[in-house]
Length: 94
Length: 259
Image 1 (cartoon, helix red, strand yellow):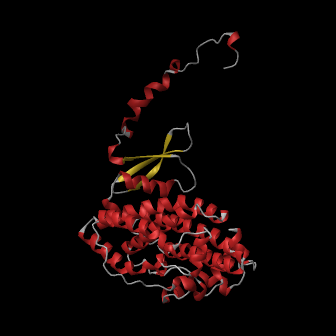
Image 2: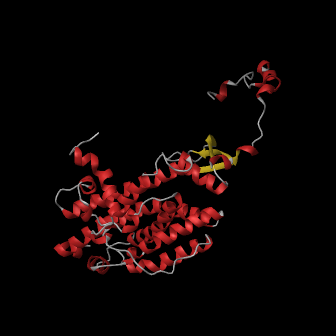
Image 3: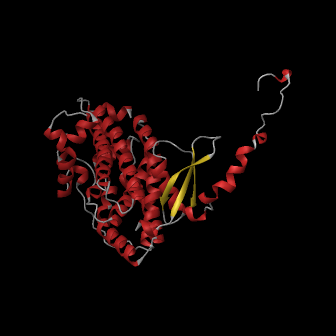
């Protein structure tokens, strides 16, 4: 039966002020039941205050084989980090 | 509450009510826990286990208070594991066999709809201990009801096969719902003291909620008015014996065992 249900990715916000984080996935026939299932499967130990679910199929992902062209060029660009500024004495500890 | 607990008859009525409430959650919790590892899908398996654990947690509170009111040093564990079938006060509905998944869900829905109305009324109990337990439990039961009602609608108004199974479940369980609303002297004493609502007073709201959900589920409410009863006064079906044999085995075979 579960093979007929689509897969959903579950995101839970742990506390006010923190972002939703991906916690896992589950099967459900629709969004409403996916949230109920997420409540039962992923918030049993008081983990969450908010749940997002999204169909796994609706997520577009970068391809692992593109890793080189996508990410390697930024390896050698240290000047993109804000570490080359002199902080004036009066500013003190930041 | 003071008035009720001051007399031996009042205490006996309160004890009776606490055993009935705690035994309902205990036996249904045990029944639902039987699904653990056997549900059609993992997600439903965990959801049912959560429901069972909620009910058993509520049992600890109700039977814990029952032991206190009785005043003979019995704990919730003693009451759960060391009483015989005739001393149990749960309604017959909760000891019905699990059957298929549809039967389990229908039993859950019919019970949840009643449980919710009961707890809603108990929040205003003149006995603060009863009101506090009800306030804690109703949060869990609101979710139980939302979940079971949703699934009854989905399966009732689902495929031809799921509709057939849900209608069978309703036909098989319907005559066990009447007992929820039958009162006796103990119920009357509690209602007079404002400790608990009279069972009959819960019926209109239950009828309305059940009719709405079953209507949406395209299920036909059986016309039979026959009422199976007896559980509330300790007259049970054979099924309770099997439940107790499994549930109580360890404490009976190894008295006082802990782990």
